[in-house]
Length: 227
Image (cartoon, rainbow, N blue to C red; front, side, top):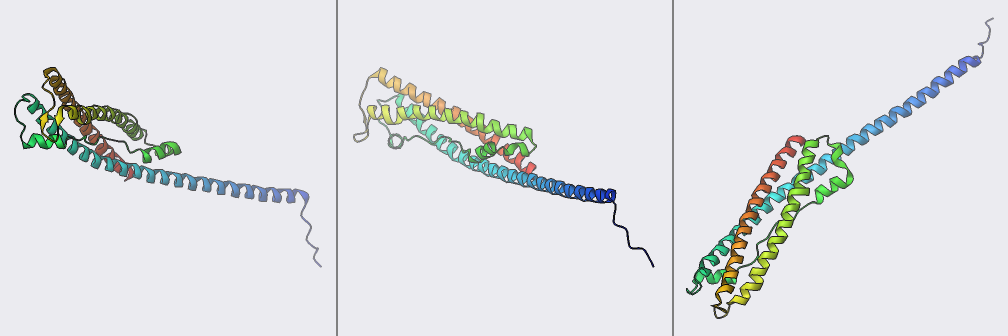
């Protein structure tokens, strides 16, 4: 008759329980590691999607630069037409000059679109991209070049408003189509302001072209990164 199996000894139980405990700890560790890896991938995916929104914003900037450039060029043409006439204000203005007087309105200037950029900055998503050079160039575009454009635009708008809505109405009667003054120093002063506006427009158009080129370059870099 065979003997009944012996109960496991204390040492054997300790080893078994320790093994089970280690298995549980290892399982928890692996679960945490997998969760962390999944979370990291999810955050990187979200960061890439946000970068795609920045890319969309840059594309909108390019289109807006085109519109600003068109209006600024039209304003420059009107300013130069007025300058030509004010060189000899005794001459009767032709229909083209009359049209400028009636429609000498301030052209649009750049206002920044930073929503997508600010979202990535505030959420710290740029650190997840592991593309420091690209992030630096995007940052320079939004925090330096566009802010400078905004500042220049405010100065430009203020100077244009003084001329188009202030001094012009003091010098020109829109109903009778005649000058309200023949004072030479006063007319010279106004002509000088027009020259200043013309210089401002030339400068601003150059800034528009430069920043459009920067935006287009960043779009290409972002496309290459996202691919």
